[in-house]
Length: 333
Image 1 (tube, rainbow, N blue to C red):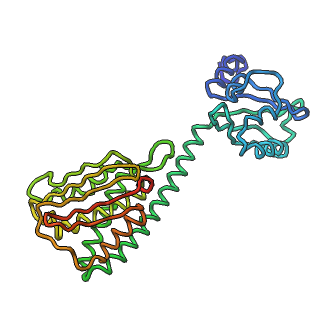
Image 2: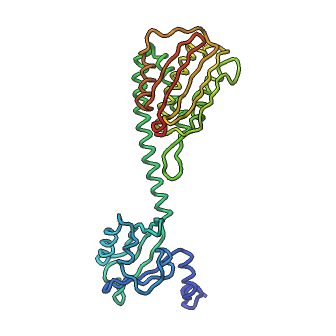
Image 3: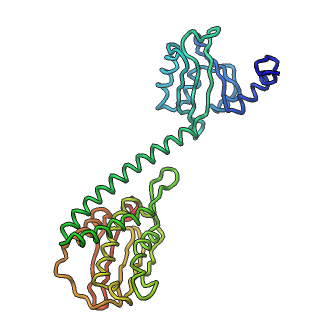
C-alpha cells in the first residue's frame, strides 16, 4: 500500500498522534477574535499547566519570562501580517525551572481557518543551552587570548630592559611564558558557569616540577599547602611569582646546587593563605644590594596589585626564607 493512500496506517489519526508525541511536538490553535488558545495535553505539560478549555494568551503570558513577555506579545500580534512560516523563541518559567520554547506556525490572515491560526510548541531548552555555552566559550577564549597577549607584551618589555643580549632575553622570556602556559593548562571552567579554578597545590607542583629534575635526587622540592581553588587571574599572577623565585633560586640559591632543598608550605586563615618559601642546603647568601630589579618589580607588582598581599624576605645564614600573604578573595579571581 503506497504512502499516498489515505488508508495507509501512517495516516491513521492515532498513529499521527503517536508520531507527534514521539517528536515532542505540542499542538495549539489561537482564536484571533477572542484571544483563546486550545492546546493538546503535550502543550499543557510543556507549560506546566492544568488542562482546561479556558486558556487565553494572558494566561500563558503570566508564565513567560518577564524579559520576553512584551516581545512575545508583539511577535504573536505581528504574525497576522507575516507571509509564510514564522518561529518565535522565548523563555517560560515552570516553578523554579526556566525552559526555552519555540512557537512555530504560518502567518498572514490567509492561513486562518474558521478564524483560528494553528501552530506548534517545541521545547528547545537543550539547543538554547548549547548555544549559550558556545557563546560563553567563544567570549571566554577571546578574553583569555587578549589577556595573554597583554601579559606577553608586558613581559617582553620587562625582559628587554633586564637583559643585555638577545640570547639572554630569549631564554628568560621563554621561561616566563612557559610558566604562564603551565598555569593556564591547569585552569578549567567549573560547572554551571561558576568561573575557573585550579587547586593551589596542583598549580604550585606543576610550576616547580621542571626544577625538581635539575638536582642530584628527585623530591628535593616539597609542596604542602591547603586545599583551595585559584582563579584564572590569580593563577597567572602566581605563576609569574613562582617562576621568578625559582629562577633566582636556580641562579643563586638552593636550586643552584645538586643537594639544595626547597620547601613551599602554607596555612590558611580568614585573611587568605600564607605561603612560606624556605631554601636550605644552598650556597651562602647575602642580601642583594639592588632589590628593585625588574624581576623584583614584577614580583611586587603581582603580589600587591593582583593578589592584594605582601611579601617579606629573610636572608638568613641557613638560606632564604620568603613569606607571601595572599588574600582569599583575590586568589579566587
